[in-house]
Image (cartoon, rainbow, N blue to C red; front, side, top):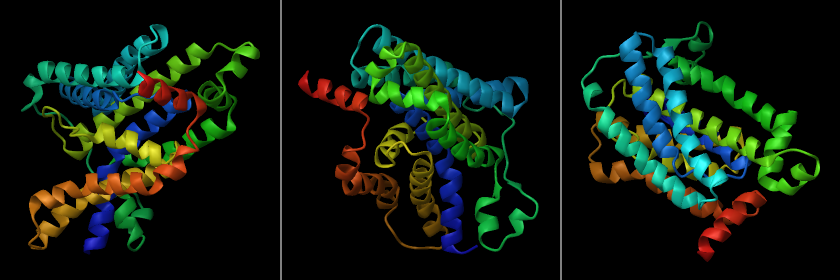
Length: 305
C-alpha cells in the first residue's frame, strides 16, 4: 500500500469518530445551542459502548448504549442552558469535566476487559475498485453507516419540515413563536440528538478504531469536532470532509514511522491539531458571516460577561 492510500484509508477510519460527533454538534448548533461538552458525550459513549458490548457480547448494542449515554450527558447541558438560562460555553465545559470524571470512575473495571468489536469488512465489487476500493470500501460497519448518514442528514436539515423548524430555532426563533411553535422543545431535541451522535462517535472510537477502553481516550477529539463544525459551517458534507482531513493528519505519523522517516515523534503528534488551527485561521473570517443569529448572540453574551 502506498503512503497516499495508507494515509487516506487512515483518514476515513480515524476521522469517523470525529465525523459522528461533528454531525451531532451541527444539529445542536443549527438549533442555536453550542455544546462544548461534546468531548464529554464522546467519552460517555466510548465507555458505555465498550461496557455494553463486553456485557452483552453484541457490538451493535454497544453502539446503542453509547448513543444513549452521549444523549443523557447532553441532556444535562440542555437542562441548564435551556431551562435554567446558564451560559452555554461555561456549561459545556462543566459537562465535559463531568463526563471525564464519571468515565474515569466507572471505567476502571473495563480497562483490560475484552469486548466484541467491529473489524474491517470488504464490500463486494466496490472493494475491488482500483485505489478507491481499498480506501473507502474495506472499512468497519460504522464507517459505512456514516456514508449513508451524511446525505440523509443533509436532506433532513435542508429539505424536510423538521429541518426548517430546526434552522428557524437557531436563526429566527421569534418567527417560530409567531407561527405557534415552541422553540424550547425543538432545541432540546437538537441538543439530545446531537449528544447521541457524539456518543456514537465515542462508540466508534472504542469498539471499532482502538477496540479498547482507556481513560480520556478521546484526547481532544470532541474539541476538534466543534472546530470542524465551525469551518464546515454546519454543512454535513463539509463536516465529513473536515473530519477525514483530521483523520488523515492522525494517520500520517504511523505511516511515516513505518517507512523509516526520521521525523520527531512529538512534531508528528502535533500535526493534526496544527492542521485544525491553520484551517480555522484560514476560513475563520469567511465563516463568521454564516453563523446562525442564535449562536452569534451566545458568543456576544459570553464576551460581555
